[in-house]
Image (tube, rainbow, N blue to C red; front, side, top):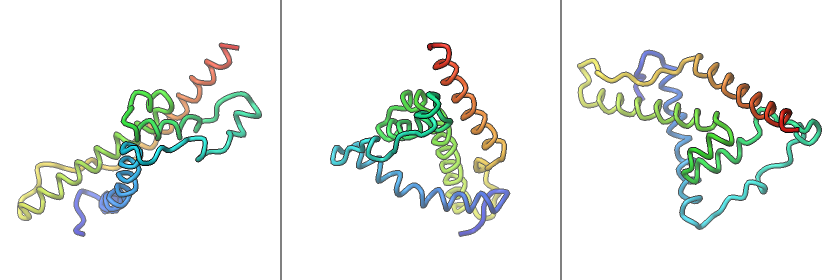
Amino acid sequence: MKSFGKRPTDSKLYILGLILAIPIALLFFLQNSGTVNFDVTDLTSPCLFHRVSGLYCPGCGGTRAVKALLEGRPAACFFYHPFVLYCAVIYILFMASHTLEFILQKKSPHKKPFVRGFQARLSYLYAGVILILSQWLVKNLLVILHD
């Protein structure tokens, strides 16, 4: 595959995103077709951090958020763990913009495409970490203040 975009890293991430789309689509189809109902408790073990401290760990709610997203409930996904929805939005923007750029580049190889793919930036990772830490602090402050 020809490298498009400004950096070859974006091309590698795009290919990885295409590969990742297959199990995501399969899980979405199975969850929404009614043939399979994933029970979150079957997939997870109790959170040791929560059990010992009584507080939530930074990842608490992540599995429920993924399940809610697969069921097409983005508001519930955001409530359980906003980082999951954040990642889904970044993934969709990245894949859609690069697919559009690739299609337009194929149609006119001699012209500069007027659409540039969504560039992968380290700042998106930092924003994700800030989001994880923020939700962790808010959830635990609510637990502490409630008791």
